[in-house]
Length: 542
Image 1 (tube, one colour):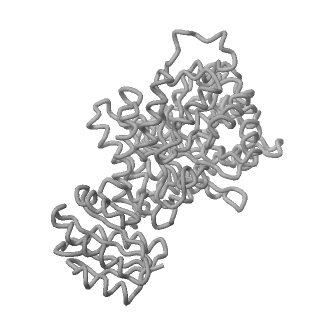
Image 2 (cartoon, helix red, strand yellow):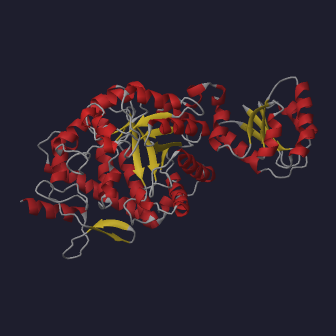
Image 3 (cartoon, one colour):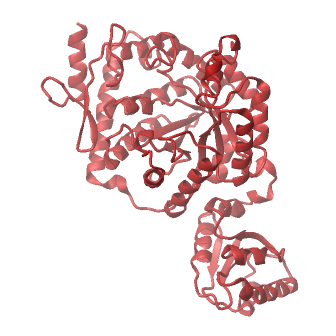
């Protein structure tokens, strides 16, 4: 396939056409650029000689001046002995004039996105409905990559408002995955509504009360760019809940906490042994049905001020369990800016360590997808400051070439995002993507970052080897629910914010040194390596 590009008439700027051709080259097209201020006659002479499949025309001056040029383009195109696809790029007022001619297969008006150009170049714009964008997570990623797809949490305190909001978001075509947030009553008591607390209706999300409610929400998304839909998992009756999500909204993927939503964090009353076993069975349930799985483990530890080794360990254990339980497509979530106080460079080293550990498990049967997000601790309550912080975090995320960006609404430090704020946050993120995608600078080669990454991987391996030896009587300690519960109870896997008592008897204290979160002895104030920290616990447990 060949593309010919030029800025026509008296228009001397070429950036738009040139960047389009660069994008086309990455998609495998053979490209020829004619330069600025090309007379329409010369353009069509080259078309006859070179016979491209696509002709890209740029013009960004005034609507009045473009009309004569487009008249000439139209007349000459009609006389060609073949019909190349014509595409046009210009300002919105000029593009509106071009659209009236009906001769262009694709028009870029400055309000579109790189993703729109990719869809045209790949021919996906010729498909209809959801098929055009991808009806499953894997299809959506494959149609978009290297441009990441976007996910955002959404759920208003009323069903009607949420339905209207989903329609608005879908029509804006800026979000690929609507991640439904049900209220706590729905998450916990959907199948036992007689014990719901009426005063909690709408608290934390949309008050879903029936399968029909889920279907209404899904139907609202069937427009615009046909976003996928997924939903937060239930905190009770988890298998019944998963089945409903699968049947009603075609849950794009599930997110299962391996260690959480139990007595450990107070979001449930189940003993940790019970919840880990149930989580593993829920992961297997989804794996058997070919549904992608996310284990949102690492950031839970970081949010509770665990030292940086713990999220790296948790990322590996989570992915290990997913693979062991038969998951083929694993969504690995990497929350940046977590815990609060970590520097950008040390945070980046921590993320790189997690990625290397997780992706060491990949093989032909286990594929991982990088999902990045800004950390909630980063965002300021002042919306103007938060917008800058969201952009800064997205810039860092783009350095790891994510498949999915979990967009966090800039307003989340103050209130849950409404539809307009979801759209605005996605546009901020897309603006950063536009100017960073395809960059080749390598922040990871910074000496401090590279050194910290290797240090974290080494420390994580110390931990994993310790667990393998400590529980060697178990054939596979890292996938044993009893072992996983025990390493939390004894504080081997620990976080500073976990309340210590007769059930959870770790002694982890953390502090920040040069932007990194590290373990230390609160009495001697000495920093602790992982082998030192684990040895202290061994003495404590006798």
